Image (cartoon, rainbow, N blue to C red; front, side, top):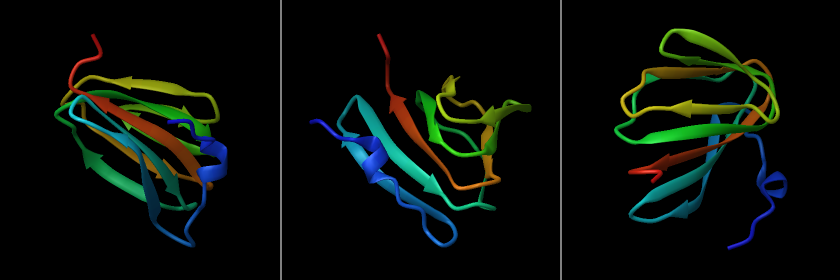
Length: 102
């Protein structure tokens, strides 16, 4: 499958729009488009993964550490890591979750 992620970005008036890019037994890839002012409260995932920020301005909090979300930022998360997000401006990112990266 070949996709142009930038062409898939569309921001809702408020809240979050998510688009599944790929999903199989080993990996899930989802594009998230968060409207400015949107939050995702603290949560965990049973899978390891990473966030790749496509565009925007926000804060990703990982295990109590604030990480600026800006284009090109890569954020790795171990399974069960507590994390939350806040979009200060419209923000889009890819979330990749995998049972095992090896």
